[in-house]
Amino acid sequence: MKPADRHEHAALSLVTEIKPGGARQRLRLGELLVQQGVLTPEQLESALAERKRSGRRLGRILVEDGIATEDAIAQALAVQLQIPYLQLTAHSVTPAVSRLLTEAQSRRFRAIPIEEAGSAIRVGMADPLDYQSYDEIQRILGRHLDLVVVTESRLDATLDKLHSRSEEISGLARELEQELQVGTSDDEPALSGALDDAPVAKLLQSLFDDALRSRASDIHVEPQERKLQIRFRIDGALMMHTEAESRIAPAVVQRLKLLAGLDIAERRLPQDGRFMVRVRGHALDLRMATMPTQYGESVVLRLLPHDGGLLDLDRLGMTASILAKVSDFISLAQGMLLVTGPTGSGKTTTLYGALARMNSPDAKIITAEDPIEYRLPGITQVQVNEKIGLGFATVLRSTLRADPDIVLVGEMRDKDTVETGLRAAMTGHMVLSTLHTNDAASTPMRLLDMGAPRYLIATSLRLVLAQRLVRAICANCARPYAPSAQESAFLQTFGATGSGPLAQGAGCPQCNGTGYLGRMGAYELLEMTRGVVAAFNGGDTQAYMDAASRQIGNHSLAHNVCELVLAGRTTVGEAMRLVGRSNDAS
Image 1 (cartoon, rainbow, N blue to C red):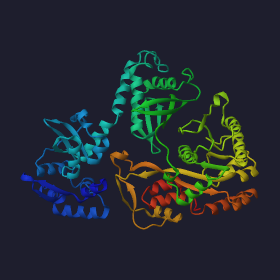
Image 2 (tube, one colour):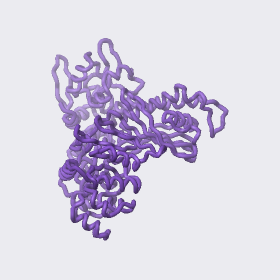
Image 3 (spheres, rainbow, N blue to C red):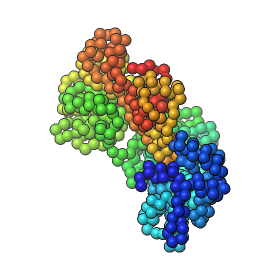
Image 4 (spheres, rainbow, N blue to C red):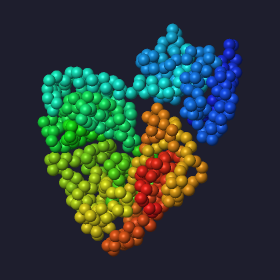
């Protein structure tokens, strides 16, 4: 039975009563609850009608509408099946036994191994009559199962605690606080022994481990007036992870600065650095940026896993027309492709997807990056270092003397880099780079504003790919959603008029209750055609923007993300956040 089928099985709420001798009597959950006196026939009829209307599971309807409690439903199951009911907590589980199933398996089967029970394993199941899961658990464990009934909410909470290290991190923070010397001033706590001591090292290692497990892209270490707060950015959204005594903040920051090779005596100016750690067998690069604040230095760590793997262009989620034009461009011998968008919008991933496709023994590829986020065999990669004068423009000028075919410049930051890159694209090289602009159409104007000659932009720039990342609906808790009148009007503004309900995530343990799990790209492409170039060279900004908008047509960011909404892959709220309510249709 597939996971989706198992959820459908739960929605139908079929319960099978085990009888001596192996006979099985099939009952519906609602009928069982009526027999047990948990529901009245009228309540069951009302709940079934709501299930048909909303698609929610019967058990969830009963709990959320206040008709019955999870405990009452679980106890009714336990009485009917003649097996124990357990009020599950993390303390009632033997950690070593619980790890006999992985977290993913436990969540998929809605079950957790609790403890040894003689020759059997005691297993708590939220749906003990899911025979497919029961058989699979028994096969994995290789032991007889001693079943108990648990509620789904307590199961989820227990799994969260067992597989999250936030409590361990909080404990290590308290241990570090106790080990800091007492009697020092509030401004400079004694750190003499703390930096090399076990508590701060273990705290950071546990923090990195939890960040990797949570799929966090950034760790924010932020000292406040009375506490130190640590937040993770997951799928683009910040989430609180740990709060600790503010007293430990200097020790944590100083340890991080030592790891990154920064000046620990300098607390008044921002600093940047990087270091590498190994977490659960994975090599993890961390970019570090410090910032002096009112209550001490804050730190932001960007996580860059070495073995995250590159995505091929075909898997980035571009529309067929955009993918075809990008693919055509990278088969050319010269010209510039700019990928635009805000920080964290996946620009580097897109460029490396293109590089991976172009990488071959007969192509000389050189990159200038800050930092080098991916390692590709056969490519010459240069780490920019502004501190010693090795900026993008300097590296790019040197690169052109090394006879490259393809050049990747991490970012067009200044006039020198822009001009050098455009001239390289005009003289027989293919140049790939990024720029921070709001959309594709405004990119040539931004280059002009940075001081690049108009003729050079018109001659060298071929494609501008603007992109954003939007959160994807969690497949585990997705359910139909009827948009409001305002949301429907927003979709219609961009020509998105599909039939049937949209989708949204209800929130579940897999997505930390957010309703979203992972992100996907939304794109728009500006091709510098003859008409667009002629309008740009004409010097009339409005005429150029009109020509660019016509060229982009219905393939704008707004249209793309609305198509994702209609496909049930993201929500109207995400589309409105990306597009902005003040935007007009392209």
